[in-house]
Length: 212
Image 1 (cartoon, rainbow, N blue to C red):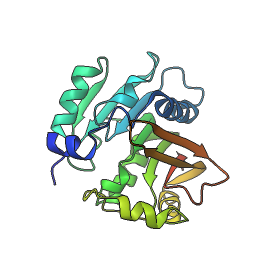
Image 2: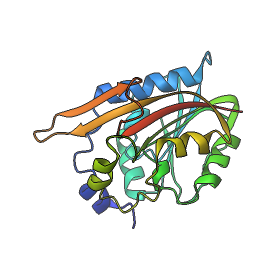
Image 3: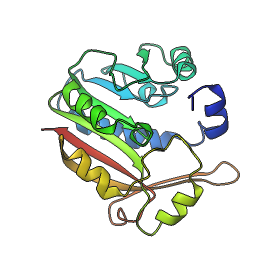
């Protein structure tokens, strides 16, 4: 399936509502922690779509974004000036590293060659560089519900949270991870609740890791 205009209009027709400012603020905080004390951090956002997350970072960041969708990258270039964007349909990162932070927000579940991608991400980071990712998970109390609601055929990895934590640990040190409860209600209200106490049962997780 191609990530063309029809894909986004069908699967993410409420893209703006599903990515409200408070959600972007949480992602921004993760990136800032991942960057540490770097004054001018370089960040690469994999699967950047329309560039909304990168648009939330201030001028001190050197920002790069890649996506498999030509349609999404065209929209990103129109909407977010000052960012270097590229279309890439493989596990290539497209831009030379090293980066201080690499992010993959609801992206890894779409990538068939997962281990190759994780290797490339690790290679693209500076020593102790930060890797921030968010993925849906299909275990815990919410697992059966999430599996039944997921209609996206491009989700090739419908996995438990320990799968992601273990797989990432091959190349990175997991610093911390959180559970995310999220849902777009009828009428446009979007719930985005980050929790540590219930992280074993949320429909998604966010993780901060560092290159070994």
